[in-house]
Image (cartoon, rainbow, N blue to C red):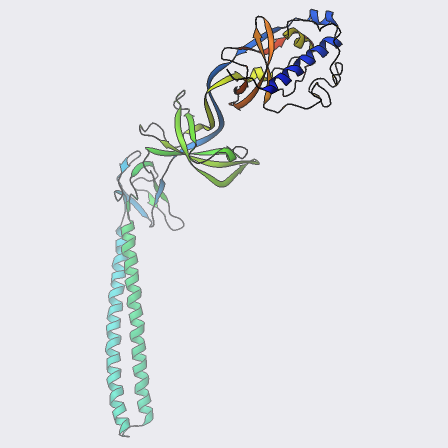
Length: 427
C-alpha cells in the first residue's frame, strides 16, 4: 500500500466540498429518485510497460545480387533455390566459344604488333648506321649537308615508328588481358557463404550484359542472423534508441512472441501520402531457421518497464461522476444542516468544481498526474486521491495513494443526471 501524502487531504476536501455544493443546489427528491448502479474494476499488482508499435519486414543482414559482367548463353547452372553455397563456389557457366574466339583474335593481334615492333627496330638500326656513315663523310666534307640531313630525318622517322609499334604492342597486351578476364567472367562464383534465395536463369537462356548487369542469383548471408526494417512514425521515433528491447510476431506463427534488439535508428526519412516514417533496424536471431525473408513483423518497442507495480485499469481513471452520481457514490446522504456552498462554488451550470475561477481551491487545478479514484467499500464509494505514473494504454501505475491490491474501483455508473462534475486533475 502506498503512503498518503498531505496533498491527498486537500483533494479530499475539494471533493467533499463539491458534494456539499451538489446537495445545496439540487432538491433532495431528485437525488433520491436517481439510484444508479455501478460497475467496478480491480486494482492489481504486476508489470507496466510503455510501448511503441510499428510494422516491418524481415530481411537477411547481408543480401547480395550476383550478376554477370559478360553476355552469353547459359551453358550450366550448378545451384538451385535454398542451396547453401560457400565463397568461391561455382554457381553457373556461360558458353565460352565466342569469348575463346575473341581471345584467339587478340592473341593474333598481339603477335602481329610484336612482329611490327621488331621490324621497326630493325629499320631504326639500319637508319642509325646510315646516319653514322653520312656524318663521317660530312665531317670530311665528302658529301653535302643536304645528304646528311636526309639521313638524320630517316633515323628520326625510324625511331618514331619503333615508339608507335611499342604502343601497339601495349594496346594488344591490354586487349589480351581484357579478353582473358572476360573468359573468366563466364564462370559465375559465389561471393560469400550463404543460401541461394533466388535463381533467375536456366540453361539455354541468353544473358545480355550490354546495358546493365543482369541479376542471375540472389544470395542471403547467414539466415541464422536476420534483421527487421521497420517503419516508425515520426511522433514515436524520438523514443527509440539503439539497444532497446523489441518483441514481435509474424503471421506465420500466430500467438508466438519473438524478441530482438534495436541495432540502428536511421536518419533517412520515408514519406508516403504525407506520412513520415523512419527505419529502426532490429537484429533478430533465427537459429531454428523458421523465420524467412520477406515476412511481415508486428513489432513492439519496450520504451520503459516497471515490475511489481500497483496497477489500475484506465477505465477507473476516466470515470467522472455527474452531480446525481456524486451524491449516490457517498451513500445518498444529504448535506449537514445549515451548510452553505463553498466560496467560489456556483450552482449547476455555473463554474463547478475544477472550472476556471471555481472550486474550493480557488480555481487552482491539480497537476496532471493527480487523479481521483472511487473505491467501493461496504456498498459505499470513497474518493481516493492518487498520483499516477507509467501507463501501457490499458493500465496505469499508481505511484502514491491509499490504494492496495484487490481494491474495487468504480469505472462506470448507470442512471443519475447527465451533467458530469469535472474534478481537479480528472483523467
